[in-house]
Image 1: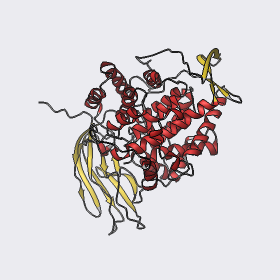
Image 2: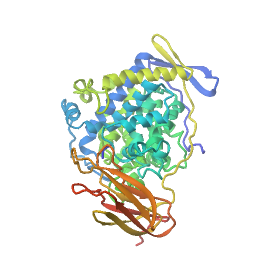
Image 3: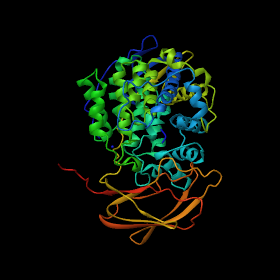
Image 4: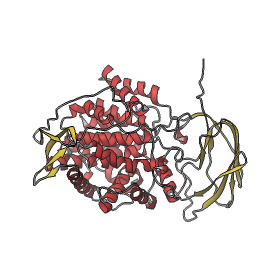
Length: 523
């Protein structure tokens, strides 16, 4: 990605039969009478975890040429997306920033490696704050918040992060599920510590969903169980949330036309494509919102029918964040069937990149395989399981529902206006309850001439905030200025630039205005 308690409508009780790899018995976990104990071979778990990491890497690389090139539209059937034995090595060499979803995962895994399974939110946040790799949207907003003293969960809350509902945590929660096979509540405990660094509400739920998908996938061997896995992965998330409602719609429409993925795409896009959070995507055919991109993941998993090519192709052709979405879908599928079941066509060139560390880390794919498995063993033991010579016993967990979170509640974007911009000042007037001044996702590179603008923000003549705006890409404030929950009415915003410089300026494109009611177009 560049650029909270009601039971769910759908519940399924089913017996897991892991073909030749694992067995279940009637032993019950004393702490959870509904949780079963199950046994899985070490070799099988290693193969599943390895497959998940490999397929993520393959998926993000495959979808890279399509990423945000097809916004709120699909890639047509007649457009071929290339995959050769040099695709991976070329991307690793020329576009290392492509793998933000993976190097963020690896950053969190390193925190666990250094501080243990009980690493704190502050330790995870500190690792992000000190990082130098490329980040965007909620991640970069969170990094800037951390660098300026704002710790989680405040760093990811929508009042402090205009991108709180974005896809960011959704694409970097894989590690939490992969280290928690069958232990969904353990995965969510990790998600709570990490996901609120950069996200809230549906943005947070996206990460919980992906982690839960992996947790469930690791204890199933048959991709024909995909819908049951998806439904179980929704169980921790409050059914009142738009995130759950969106994914339930995808499942429903898949039932209506199980052989026509485009039917479900059109229905989903029609109902769920309006982005009211992330300022850059508002009033544009650009959607980095977690729920609709999660919908494309689910669409690919359901219509892919356990086939890697169909899964990668369909998920990518859904458009929007078309590299991260096939990475998630492919990773979940591989967590079910294992590395060995990934077709050789998709693994071509993988050997050339498996020892290359990802941007901003010292961890390669081969190291990630080992580290992720080791973390899974430790999590299994911590939660009452056992690790023997050749097999492991897992105390499976029944999901607990997490609290309801709603981002941007009562805020609706109503217009886009151009401020008056001079060397010393940015000003505009609006009628509403909030605003966000927007910069482009990728700002100008000033090379060695990095600079930090010192600014003061005045709303209706009152100084409300002093803001530093670094021009350095890894320190910048992704959305330069915003304010929500203002009294309804007319307001004037003035941003004073205290230290203007000749060679640079804050990159402000326009302002998005929010009101307490949506604008409705009537014919």
